[in-house]
Length: 102
Image (cartoon, rainbow, N blue to C red; front, side):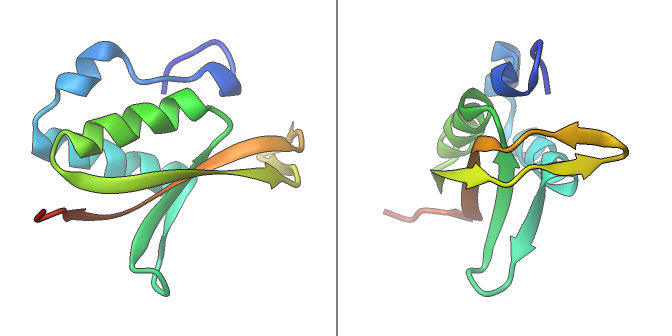
């Protein structure tokens, strides 16, 4: 997404005005890169060092009455394509992508 470093990434404001199909497509592609489907919880989970980015996704999904939640956790660090990722505080957003009927 957009921002000067991992912790400051966010969705551009115009993305928060996407229609439902485009919003779900955006989330789906983000999930391909930084997420996975958890069969046990019947949920999609995405991760980021940026709380703001995940909160933007939460707002975007809630616009269509899709519940999601964010949890904070301590990442161990890793390496992606030769680039070292420092350990530290990260965030996970979980959602079933189902509309809340209430």
